[in-house]
Length: 223
Ligand SMILES: NC(=O)c1ccc[n+]([C@@H]2O[C@H](COP(=O)([O-])OP(=O)(O)OC[C@H]3O[C@@H](n4cnc5c(N)ncnc54)[C@H](OP(=O)(O)O)[C@@H]3O)[C@@H](O)[C@H]2O)c1
Figure 1 (cartoon, helix red, strand yellow):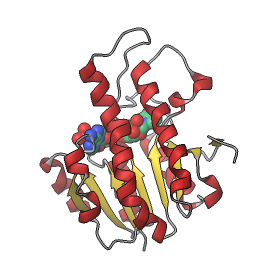
Figure 2 (cartoon, protein in one colour; figure 1 turned 90 degrees about the vertical axis):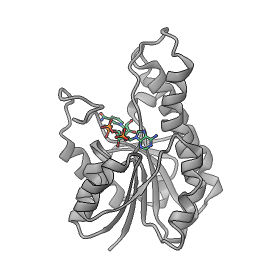
Figure 3 (cartoon, protein in one colour; figure 1 turned 180 degrees about the vertical axis):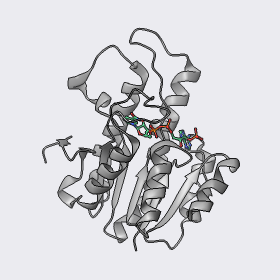
């Protein structure tokens, strides 16, 4: 039985992954930011912590809450969408909301959880997107793209800091969730099964890569 930590599990991919890992008999610690979202995950069998990843005071207690745990897989799933086109300036409030949940939260959570995952020889994965890639830039969702590109850099830059840690980014595909919408081509179950397969097969050489749910891989750096 492995221990899986899922940061951002109230709904969508985080919740579905919680359910799927529990279904395989693993232990799951799942985090949500609202108290009213705790019971549903607890009913599934998850251990639930309250954590607002956009709030540094909330994130600062994470290592303490996880003290003594040996974590096999830690997933930074939390993310928010902003679909404004390029050229439409985000307000400071929009910028802060997206960057805090999508980037700051990861940069503050990683140093707290990395030692516990490294000790277990495990994997830390941040949920990014193909929309983060410079080669695929277009005018849609300007701020979201910028935030996920920054998240990729946060992953790539941190790899040397924890040499024994398999630190990578994941792309779940355009998936049917609240964020992806009902017209998304990838059913939630397919994305979850694919991500779990990819994570089960992740090796240290995958550090600093973006792994897609279908197994394709993009290296962020060549070293
Ligand atoms: N669905 C797609 O097509 C797609 C494609 C590529 C990448 N992704 C990425 O995959 C991840 C999951 O997406 P999804 O489709 O499951 O999105 P979703 O259905 O909109 O769910 C987003 C999740 O993130 C949580 N979250 C956001 N900000 C948070 C914060 N500050 N603290 C704690 N939790 C926070 C939400 O919690 P609340 O309920 O409290 O808001 C919710 O559980 C995201 O990072 C997203 O960018 C999704």
